[in-house]
Image (cartoon, rainbow, N blue to C red; front, top):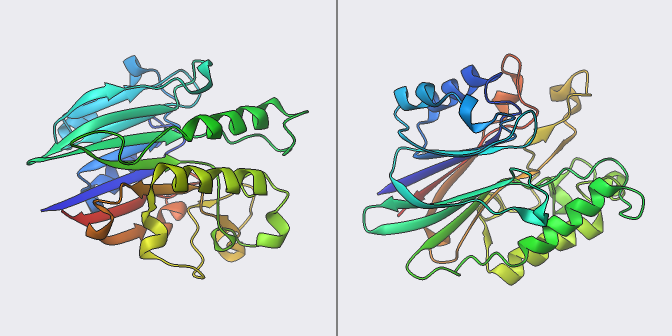
Length: 267
């Protein structure tokens, strides 16, 4: 049995609904996790996704900011919304997906971007990001009896040298500073997570999932970063068959600055 999961920071689900519909039509994921939906739950376009074959939908949204949504062809239960840093942001959602006899806890996360200045003493947004990362250390890949785990989302950190267009030039830029990258790698190591993207596409190959809107020609400049991730618990990591980075989506009409990532597992 094949399980296909996709993650995408869509940067407003209502504005970019046609792009999500296109992704579904072309890729047909079993589970689709969206971040930065920027939509309160009562205004989420539920019927559009139900008509596309996703009757199981979990939402954690808020007006104008943040927001995550998990859409599934497969039934799920036990919806959890963790309020990281106790500030009321809609940045986390998890569900337990039922796939035959197997259960998979799917975490959908949107980590704070952190602002522009990588100094927590003068930048409250960066302080918030570091506090969020610290709380993520408690997330364990094998922490739930009888269930595997997958963690996806826009984590807003490019942890490795080859996850950015220039390691040297970005060492003092938020998303690739040592305090952030070391923090994310600590979460992976302590939590027993497997980075499926780097399992499928080992270094030193460059991998990007985000290209800034500020670039006049994002494709020619190709100054990207790998800010979006798919991790899993060790028990299902060997089942990984393929990871796809849909770079072409960055060139779609009115695109998000992030592109979808898809992992296919032969479970």
